[in-house]
Each structure stands twice: as C-alpha cells, then as structure tokens.
Image (cartoon, rainbow, N blue to C red):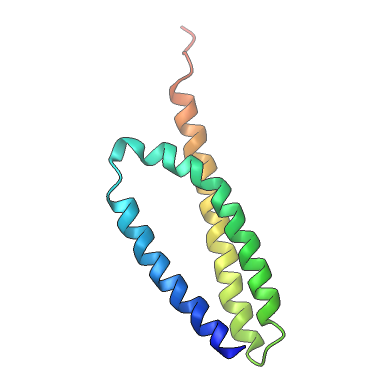
Length: 99
C-alpha cells in the first residue's frame, strides 16, 4: 500500500505541472468562463480527497494522511467558492441596469 502513496504524490505533481501549462496558454478572455466550468470538477476533487483521506487513515501515518487530505479538501473548497463568486460577478455584468 506504500507504493500507492508514491504513485498518488507523483501523479499530483505531474498533473499540477500540466494544469499550470494548460491554464497559462488560455487567452485572458476565456478565464472567467473556464473558472465557472471548473466548479463541477472541483466538486469531484473534494469527493476524491475525502475518499483518499479515508483510505489512508487506516495506514500507519494517519496523521500525515489527515493533514494532506484536509489541505486538499480546504483548497478545493476555496476553489469552488471562488469560482462561484467569479461566476456571480460575471453574470452581474450582463444584467441591464435600471435608470
């Protein structure tokens, strides 16, 4: 089961680099719609972090698993809230103002 932790950490590092390179190449006009579309994926990330944390809490390093899992859950939750705030602000730009 120890090799699984190394695989997950390696996968996290590779996907972080790939995600950064992908987002870096997106034109600035598409950042807001992209952010609103990522809310669903962040919900899946929260679910994955909960499941992974639960699996690794049964191991010897339960404290380490709880800390990393908690960090992943908090980070994804912040991303979801930020995405909804940006989407709300974007939608307010399209409403007609009463004069």
